[in-house]
Amino acid sequence: MPASRETVSDVELGRRAYRRKQNARSVLISFVSTIVFAVIVWITIINTPGWNRVQRSFFDLETAIAAWPRVIAGLWINVQVLFFAVIGVLVLSVLLATIRTLRGPIWFPLRALAAAYTDLFRGLPLIIVLFLVGFGLPGLELFPRNSAQFWGTIALILTYSAYVSEVFRAGIEAVHPSQRLAARSLGLNHGQSMRIVVLPQAVRKVTPALMNDFVAMQKDVGLISVLGVVDAVRAAQIETAANFNFTPYVVAGLLFVLLALPMIRLTDWYTARLRAREQMGSLV
Amino acid sequence: MTPPVLRLDGVRKRFGDTEVLGGVDLTVAEHDVVALIGASGSGKSTLLRCVNLLERIDDGQIWLRDTDISDPRVHADRVRARIGTVFQQFNLFPHIRVIDNVTLASRRVLRIPRATAEATALELLDRVGLAGKAREYPDRLSGGQQQRVAIVRAIATNPELLLLDEITSALDPELVVEVLDLVRDLKNEGTTIVMATHEMAFARDVADRVVFLDGGVIVEEGPAAQLLREPREDRTRAFLARFLT
Image 1: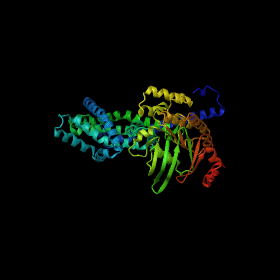
Image 2 (image 1 turned 45 degrees about the horizontal axis):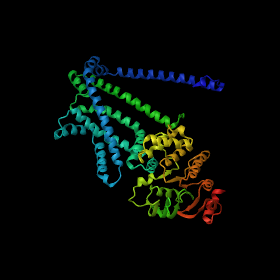
Image 3 (image 1 turned 60 degrees about the vertical axis):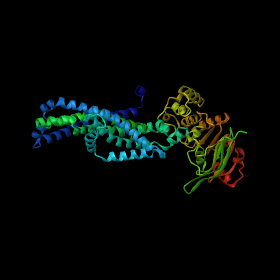
């Protein structure tokens, strides 16, 4: 901003000095209060009667180092599952949401099927879907034998698509009807209006919600361990059983948090940016 | 003899118990500019939406040249592609650039190659003084600019008929002029226009014929100068008196 190089009135200079002072004060206050708060929490915890035992069985550095290679290898499995599940969920949920907006009698069976699907899989607990898909579907012997990791990914896609398709549908309905009207009045057909005009706007509207679902999925990939996949959670379990020490769980937990943090921050940043754009830089 | 561009024959439309159009007959010849006037709820907008097949009529017939477009067997998308529509709220697509707004129908409905469509669009935008805004998103434009883009979008496909639905009602007074000037230009080029409007002065200037609607029926229609200056019907006089004072 060239404004600072121009001559500025004394009143504005005074206001700037005041704001600078206020700013420095807020930083100082928040710094001190954070330190005080952390110290109080720390002292309270280490003075509890059982702290020594808890520290040994949950925060043991040696166990953590020993468990590290196995847990990190397991986490890599989680990341792979997450990658394929995200792609699967995006494709399936957009498809479901679009099917539910189709009009015309010929589409009734598809529409009904999509509605039944979302009802069913939003109601079913993920862990039951995992068991049914992971142990049930391979029994059909329809497909060549696939790994538990494969079926776990399928189960995640099935459950999360039901949620995410509802988010997309909400977004589609949030696009003002006048947009569809304008598209149709140009001669675009229903499909074109959806694809070119409605869906792109819907996706923008629901992106923060979708990112949040992504964060939720990021930790739910840990549940595939119930199928016997040696992911981070399973690896931690094995290490825990071997040493009678719970530290590997803490290690796995921290790794999951680290994995989720970038996405959480990105979601916050994107939401803030959307809000800033809508408020056009106003103060409140 | 060539048929008129648009002919309405006893068109009726009801929403529930309210009759919004109670048997409207209207003929619009080639190069005609017809202004629909009347109070809110008189049926002006509904009439335009029926012509564009955005509403289904309950009785009567609508002819676009020699096609009966009220026949359920007509291909509605093809009919709409022959008619340009401009809405009160502009309804530009906010997620695509001005140029893409303008070329969308040419590319997707008429299947004109992008380069050709963009050349035409730039020429049109240039004529309304907005070529410099072609690569902007609509929300960076003023209301008047947005509405001019909406008009350009509507005429980019060379429609046989242009419908304008109170296109200045959502604009600040100082922006109304630029939009009305554009409509005047279109008239001079011979565009066939049916417009619902509250701008009586503009209707007098530009319209060949003015149609006064009240309670869903045409109370009076005639040459603009005559109808607005010396209306024959009491209802027309009462309506105009409220407007011109």
